[in-house]
Image (tube, rainbow, N blue to C red; front, side, top):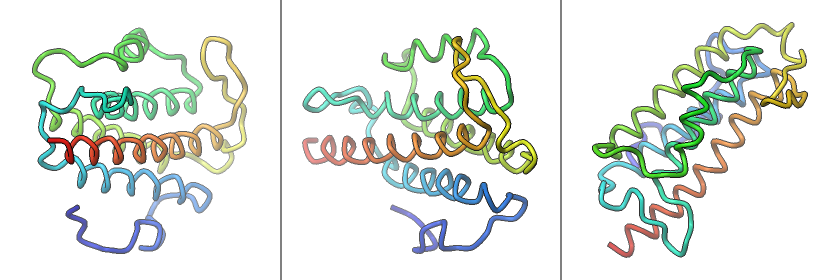
Length: 172
């Protein structure tokens, strides 16, 4: 992994422009981005959709992490998912269209993290515990709950991605 500062992101201090309550969310997303970019560097496109022992593919994790961040932060803005987001959700479990590369999927994730950090930096403290509906059923959550889950879910899939990539590289 090519990380310039060996300390994990959360140990590097507060991020400017982020509420103290949302620092852990931003730190987790930045940590995920660093680790993901490191582990996916030089990962061959030919292994992207392989499922070792039936586990989810690296391509799935990359698409899913990007999509979940987008969806959860949409709900945090009190918006419903667009037709494009619903289409992306349906397509996550399947190999992306021809021509999709590791580089492209990593860039899409990086862009989504940038968008998430922008939204987090614009979130006001007074809305953190406002209720937000999730999904068509509008299951109640809060802005804070959605943002924390976005970070937690990203880190959970990052862990799965790291293991999948190591297994695939060992077998290549």
